[in-house]
Amino acid sequence: MIHPKTELKFISDQIGYGVVATEFIPAGTITWALDDLDREFTPAKLKKMNPLYQQILETYCYRNGKGNFVLCWDYGRYVNHSFKSNCLSTAYDFEIAIRDIQPGEELTDDYGYLNVSEPFKGIDEGTRRKTVYPNDLLNHHQTWDKQLLKNFPKIPKVEQPLKSLLTPKLWNTITAIAEGKKEMDSILKNHFPG
Image 1 (cartoon, rainbow, N blue to C red):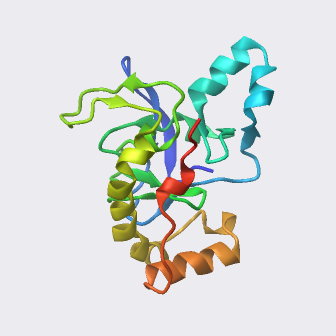
Image 2 (tube, one colour):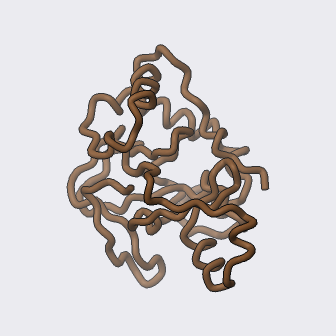
């Protein structure tokens, strides 16, 4: 489920639609969490589907560490790619804001950690990386882990509208990581080597 203080909005002809903050979202806020309404498709199930559905799933899904395609039921599937993303996936089936997100600002992910099936060129944002590759997690997980570690201590300190989607056990794990009592699992745990 996507953060409730967001809306689907047309961004531009080049980008299409995206998810935009309707209110200030501070760094450390859980911006998306896997929930019971999200759908998961195995590669075998995807192959048996009509090609029209296959294309839709290739466009709007991410692949988890098991190689399954996950389709967000809400407009979380419209979060666009950015090499300078303001949200970052964790190894715990949720994403957090890695910097403050202002009202009207688009929420973005780096698709490099979403196990894309094929490489694609992103919009030039002045970064060294210009292309997203299927194995970007192998090459960039240390950088993303540092960003997560910097922001994990903020998670228990800010309002979390999506906290009810997390189990008490997961919240205890988050708190222990935030307090330095437990080591954070690397985002590399999400890698699917397919």
